[in-house]
Amino acid sequence: MGNDLAALIAFVRRHPRLLVLTGAGCSTECGIPDYRDANGDWKRPAPITYQAFVGDEAARRRYWARSLVGWRVMGRARPGPAHHALAQLEHAGHLELLLTQNVDGLHSAAGSRRVIDLHGRIATVRCLACDARLDRAAVQTLLLERNPDWGALSARTAPDGDADLDGLDFSGFLVPSCPHCGDGLLKPDVVFFGENVPRDRVDGALAALQRADALLVAGSSLMVYSGFRFAQAAAAAAKPVAAVNLGRTRADDLLALKVERPVGAALQALAGSLAESASAPV
View 1 (cartoon, rainbow, N blue to C red):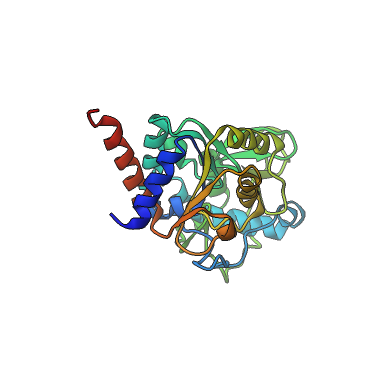
View 2: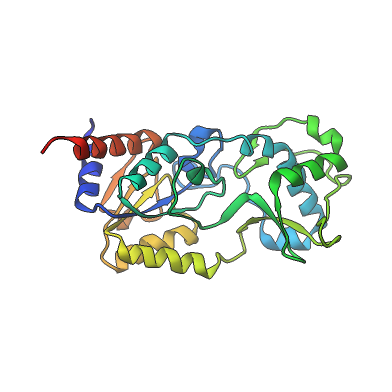
């Protein structure tokens, strides 16, 4: 075992009750791409903003066309090593809360129960007019009924159920309205760029941080402020911060420990070692 993994295990033993903040690196092993490179820079154009989605019909057509194709990967994704390791850590009593920036729902699918989905879940769609909620799979049916030719397209998968369909003409793509109220805009029930994270989620996470012994960041560069704020809050409260992440993070100067390894393997080693210690005879 490497010295950095031994240091991570020692960190958790010293701070047995963690707030864990996860990002896209936890889901890359499940076939869902991440947003940023090792330097924290965008790998592709930044995602659509809330303002563009609600204010520009062409932007909405493009979004839903790409989502129709990309949903095939997102809708079938299953938890990977990082998700299962964190569920194991929770069941062993090491997690005060799992706070995820991901919208794929894979932590809950792996068995984690103390979860706040900071940015919502892509599997739910909300009507902006009547506030009705729809299952994303049902919206996929509506999209395919109106745009059957698009169902045969394939493209490189992009993050969060998106797909790279650059160069196509989206002007004829038909975006369904809300089937409940008849004309409301349908939007994934996730926080887009330009939107604020709901205050109750932030407050719940900050309260959990106060109860926790330390913050562990797993698979996130923390380049988005909605995640970085919790590293700042931990530092302000004199709570140590550790990170398992390949590449730079926005909080590097706040870290007590950094492990630059694939997050799934590192968390599996952590969970396995703690389990062995718990079961060892006294």
